[in-house]
Length: 104
Image: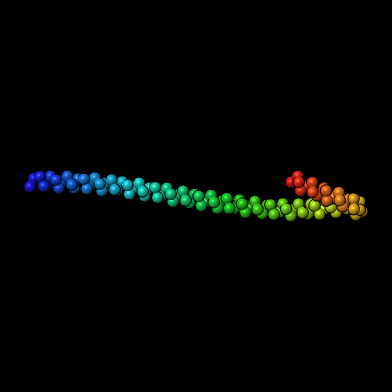
């Protein structure tokens, strides 16, 4: 009878230790989940910031392209006014316009 009681006490002690290990593992898992949630929120904020930067960059490029078109129109009109619209000055304006595009 004493052997049975001792055996049962050892089994209960092992079960208690296993339960304690399980509790510690659950605690570690909860902490890891909290860290992952925090990292996901940070990544979402960073992605939103990157999206905003891309949007601003695309908007700036569109404005720059429109400005470049206006500059080219003005340059061609100026060159045309210098030569009173001769073919030579129109070709020169075209060549200048091409150089502008290559240098940008």
